[in-house]
Amino acid sequence: MVIVLAMTLAGAGIARAANLELPVPRVTIYPGDTISADQLTDRAFIAQTVTRSSVFDDRQALVGKVARRTLLPGQPVPVNAIRDPYLVNQGKSSLVVFENGGLTITTQAIALQNGVAGDVVTLRNPDSGVVIQGTVERDGSVRLGGQ
Picture 1 (cartoon, rainbow, N blue to C red):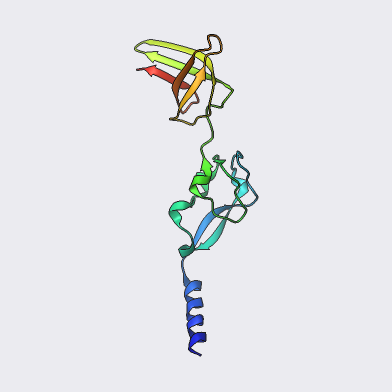
Picture 2 (picture 1 turned 90 degrees about the horizontal axis):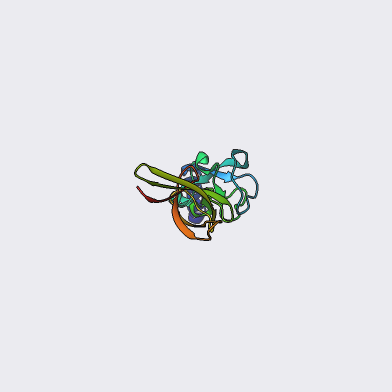
């Protein structure tokens, strides 16, 4: 009888535990897919069963991001399973900007790797074959040294 009472109290405690609403995929999202708002829904989880710092708790923070791995329906989205979309894509032409004082030079170069804003990427000048490095800007251009 003591065991039954203890189990009943434990069950009641879990029922009263704080619920946590987290965004979860409605459908399977595959690596490389951009996440849209219609692919997400909210689901309640028991707060003690989820480590909030390791999963997304804001639905809008996921929209427009890209999946790094397969995201399953109904499961919380781990922080390390999402990345920003690439602004510079490997094998594609990118605008390269060099500024120094009042001098500005722009050209096109072929990206040798993918990159998001702030990444240092390597590019190849298609005319000369020279390999250069620059920093990806928020507008998708690549800024070379200078000031």
